Length: 66
Image (cartoon, rainbow, N blue to C red):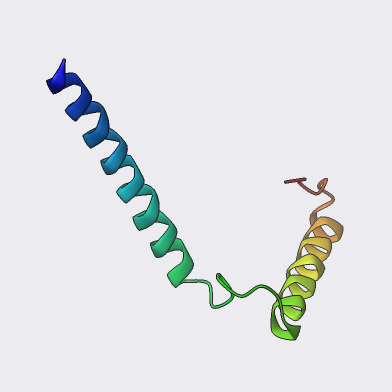
């Protein structure tokens, strides 16, 4: 019984560590990852929306909704 509890706790700890590592690696490439909001982040979001719109107009595809 004790071994099962230890294995469950260990599995949860490894899962949490993996999740935090993945989050850290994806945030490293995004300068606005932890920023709650600023003019730079809004400008980046607007530019990405404009690029998606240009892509849709150019290729005639429907825009993906997230």
